[in-house]
Length: 147
Image (cartoon, rainbow, N blue to C red):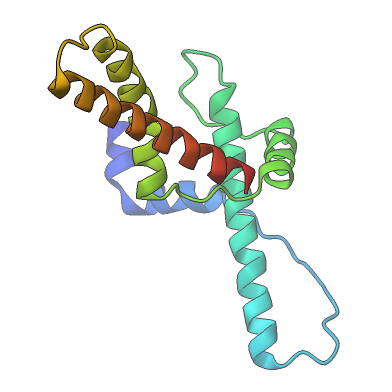
């Protein structure tokens, strides 16, 4: 595709539709209302979009360096399906979890450094506060992983 082709909207739209896949799915939903059918249709479409995005991520993760074209292969789709069934949709971590994840090594390292400088009440207080924060961060992370 030349640089002139990229600026042409018809060529860009054609390249997008060339990679678009249409799949027909038939499912029996006995007693389902029209709203339920529409909701089911939306859920199936959302899963298909998620599978397509994960397939592209799987292809990108194993792409040979220097290859510029995205080429989703059957093995990338299989790996994506396995990843989704194994891990599901990963939720974005909460701010508290991200803070605890960053704070655990910071507070632990600072506690180790402060352990060498316990000359007065101020240093002991700072050491105790840092140790408390490190234990709090690690405890929160362990609780989140086990629950």
